[in-house]
Image (cartoon, rainbow, N blue to C red; front, top):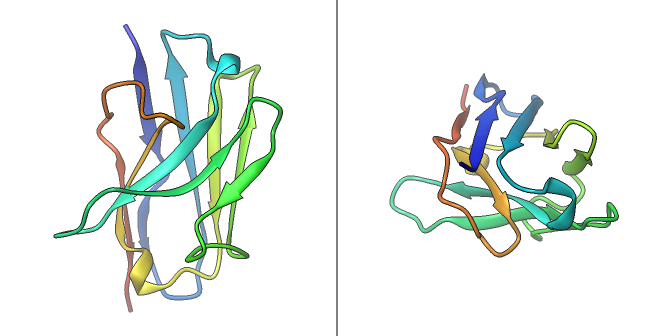
Length: 114
């Protein structure tokens, strides 16, 4: 069974940083582009960043220059380093493949507030 387990969220002040982790199991991790998605209250889920099998990243314009996605194929884990956080980044963050192939995990809450 596929598992996608997000962690690392929390409450942070504007300008702060968080590092999210997504630990996966149940599929061949290194055959897939992996992405981070987020969903804010009242909004649809959106793609934040993704990273190819070979490690090439892409970012939504809203986070470009602030977030860094990375992956460790040996650990079946994808990370999202979030710097210079803004209140607009407040959302539940999820990981999945670049084609949203699996059921969504529980996500991890990121709240950016003073």
